Length: 130
Image 1: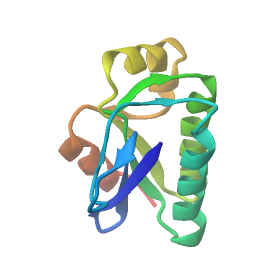
Image 2: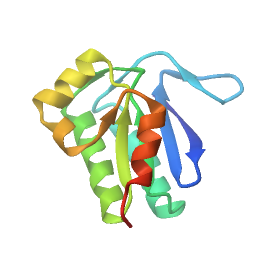
Image 3: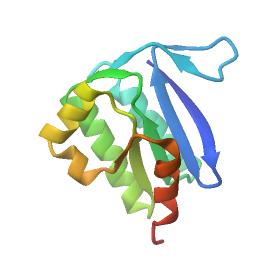
């Protein structure tokens, strides 16, 4: 799993996960599974943003995540919890229908905001009270 980090607003970073990084390291491609094999890499990135870079607003693009298991769900919830503790927020963007179904069944979709559109996700950060 590769994670591409991009600044999409002054205080918002978007994380996009994929199978491989492009040659110019400006995007990722290929679908991945968010599972026990790679959830630690995701958490390392989230912890780096929150603790080292002091960025507390994170958008996680799930468009290239084909499958998510309980460890992937844990990582998303842990990131959400840690961002909230720093008066920030973690939102999810564009999960496919299978991943969305898992998020709904586990009630994660009630705890973490999910958006299909990046602009709507960005707008949600402006509504956050500090």
